[in-house]
Image (cartoon, rainbow, N blue to C red; front, side):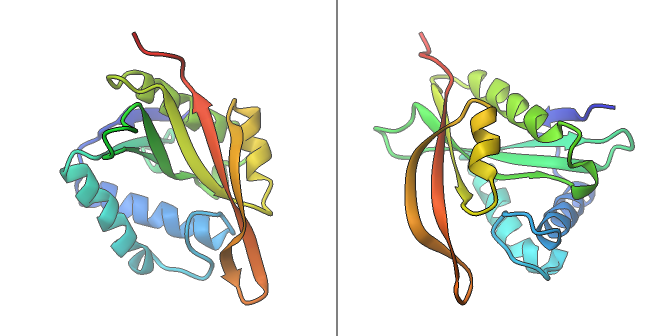
Length: 177
């Protein structure tokens, strides 16, 4: 069964807790979403609050995917640029699919839903995201149409002696007329 995606869902305690739980589960399964295991939803909450503040300020939009039980199973945050010369593209942050749904094509579905959402935003021509090297993520994003446009070697320190590249990927959505 496919995920059901929603842009700008109503945020209440259940959604906040669902995203925090998802983020912790993805992190604890080794996902590259800003933390290294072990983490708890309480550890995640301050970063999640930053996303919610950006949403309240109108800088960020939330895309969620729910599974057949209505549980939050995927997320992505679409963040507008505030620099006046870069408002034609946005950032995609915290792209996650719950580990129990890995291998079902939901990551590709999430990226498609994010691109569709971005195309619906006035003046947006591209999506940029960054990913951690050493995980094969750039190959996955590449298979979804993203192109590698930058790489900073050893910019992410996962642990002492474990430095990874910070890779920037771009998806062109075409010119907006």
